Length: 168
Picture 1 (spheres, one colour):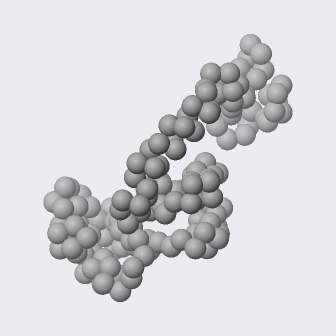
Picture 2 (cartoon, rainbow, N blue to C red):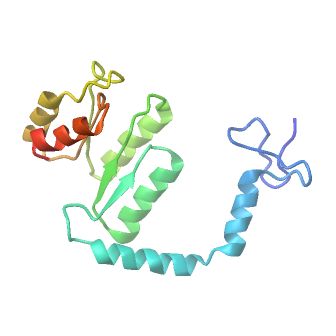
């Protein structure tokens, strides 16, 4: 079995591709490219400006897509700890959520005092007949936490109805 000459990850590791010319993996090559070609100080200054432009103007300072994987966990924690911002955490369950991601989600949300309500009406999921708006409206009326509702949308009218009929 081949391994990367730099990090020693085996070729069987998820998403790893070993280059047959130099026996280095795609992750090491990406890391090297970023070290050599990205001005991280300049990028941080750009992020600082964007954050300050929107901080405190809305209920949330930004939207963070969050799967519970290492990249989205790092991003969320970095933004909260480095910038002390209030993010709206958005998740989408595509049906293939790994159990370790779910555990990470629970830990991170508890750690940071964040919260969300995730509604996936399984009886409507995949049928493309529209959301269960009664359930969504009930949860909205009884909680101040961000709500993520999915399962059932089949066209734009279903999405539009969710906003209009639940008064989001």
